[in-house]
Structures are given as C-alpha cells and as structure tokens.
Figure 1 (spheres, rainbow, N blue to C red):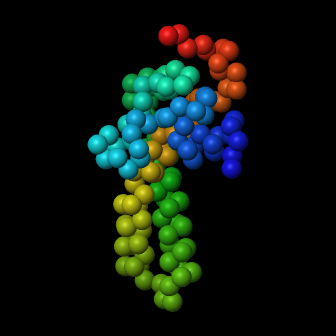
Figure 2: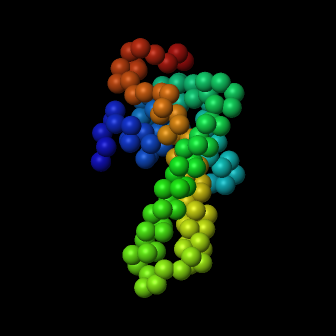
Figure 3: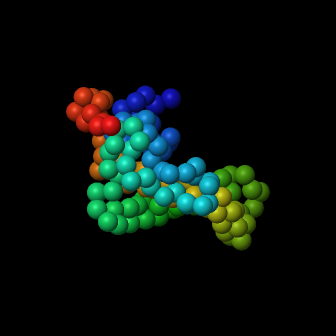
Length: 132
C-alpha cells in the first residue's frame, strides 16, 4: 500500500521511523500488560527511541487530535445512518468507539509523535552499522 520511505508506512504499521522494519512498541497493541510501552531502541537499526526523559508526553496532543477526529467521524456517521439524530445515541456511540480504539489511538499517537522527530533513512545500514 505505502512503500518504504513513506511516513504512513511507519505510522499505520507502527514500525521504526528510520528503517521501517523494527517494531516500535514492545507488545501487541491490544495486549494490556504493557499498554503500548515504547521500546528503548529499534531491534533492526538500533535507533534510540527516547531522545529525553518524558519524550512521549507530547504525544498527548496528538492523541487529543485523533480523539477529536474519531468523535467527528462518529457524529457524521450517526447523522448519516440514523433516521433521527439523538445526542444521547451520539454520546454512547462515541464512548463505545473510543473505548474500543483507545489502545490503538495511544500507540498511533506515539508513533506519529516519533515521526515528527525521526526520519526515514534508506542508507541506515551503511551509516549506522550495528555492532554485535
């Protein structure tokens, strides 16, 4: 769908922003034991994911924007699919959708935040050889 080097490849598949190969979070998105905890570094290219302590606090702003976008989409879908618009039905449908999507939106906000600061490098194997 999106080739390597495209930001959406890293974002949608939650992969390393530099190599688009390594996993970005430690566990699966809906594995609630770690709740989308970010790895220390990429297992493929050894990119350090944590530039500073509390680096991913900025992802809260991205999560807020994603939540608002989901809310607007749900309201539009309610308005188009329901015969009569009800604020109570809209509220409960937004509530259910956000509860179901919360872990994915959390992981998505962190990878979007990381993609602001890290960029794809097709020659990372030459520039940053992994020492074993």
